[in-house]
Length: 441
Image (tube, rainbow, N blue to C red):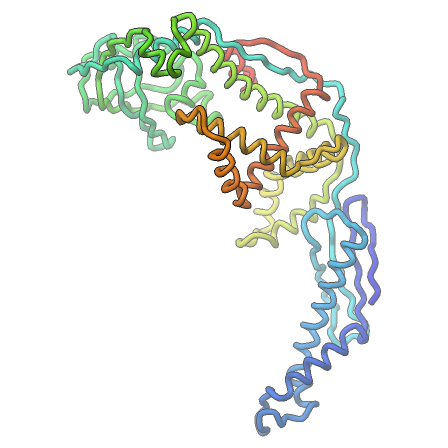
C-alpha cells in the first residue's frame, strides 16, 4: 500500500491511499474458504457449491469489506504515525470514476488540521478587573429584606400602600410566567402601584413592561425575561394576585442573629451589616472573576488570528450526530460554534505554553472545597474529613462529574493565568455599576 499526504493549504490536506491486490487477497481468500461450507446456491447442496460460484456470488462483497478494513486500519495508523492534530475526523472524498475492478484502488480522505498560531498572553489590552463593593443602599435593603423574611406576615383583605403583594406575572406571547412578591418601591413610577390599591386576592392587574423599573434589567429578576429581550420590551403583563400581606418586621436581636449565622457569630446591627457586606462582596468577587474571564476570552479570540478549515468543518458537521445536517444547517451550526472552537484552541495553547496540567490531586482538592461549601450552605459547618472524603470519592467515581469538574479546574487555573498575564486595570464599583458594565451599558 502507498499512502501519502497532499497539502492544500496550512489547515487542509488530503490523504491519498493506493491499495493493491497484495494488500487484501490473503484475507479475501480466507473469507471465501470460510464461506464455502455455508454457501447456498440453487442446484447445489449446502457446502458442496464450487469455489468459483462462491467467489462469483460472495466475492465482491467480501472484497469490499476487507479492503475497507485495510483502509480504515492504515488510515488510523498513518494519522498516529504522522502525529496529525486533526479537527474533526477524516472525510472520504467521492470519486465518480472509482471502480472496484481496478488493479489499484485509490481512496482519498479530506482532513482539517489544527492551525499553528502564536498566542500573546501579554498583549496590550484595555481589560478591567472589577472590584465590586456592597454600598449602604444595598446593605440597608438586605437588612430590611431579612426583617421582612423573618417577620410576621399579616394577611390583608385588600391592597394598601404598605402591602406586600404575592402573585404571578404572565404573558403568553413572551413566555412569561413568574411568581414573585411586589411592593410599592419596586416600580420606577410609584404611581404604578396605585393600580393595585384596593384590589383583592384573585384580581388581575395589567401593567406594561416598558419603563416599568428603574433599570430594565430588573425584568430578568422579576419576570425571568432573558437579557436579549430586556431592552425595549413593550408588552402588557398580567399580575394575578394570590396573597396580600403587611409585614411586621422582625426585631434585630440576638435570637435572629443566631438563627441567621449560628450562635454568637453576630451580636449587633453593625456586625450584621459587616457580615452582609462580607458575604455579598465574596459573591460579587466570583461574578467579577467570571466577567474578567469572559472579557479576556473575548480579547484573545479577537486578537489571536488564525485560519480554520472552515469548509471542511462544515462538511464534517453534516456527517456527525444522530441527525444528519443539511448544508444550510451545517452552515448555521458552524457559525454558532466557531467562536467556541477558536477559544478551545487558544485555551489549549495557553495551557501548553504555561505548562498547566490538571492532576488528580488538583481535582480532588477542588471537589473537596466544593463539597464543604455545599454542606455549609445546608447548615453542616463542621463535617468530618471522613464524611467529606466519602462524598468526594463517590463524586469522582462518576465520569460525567469528573469531566464537568475538570473543566471547572481548567477554568480556575486559566483565570489565575489571565489575571497575571493580562495585567488588567483594577476599578472599584458598586454592584449597580458592575451590572451596567457587565451588559455593556
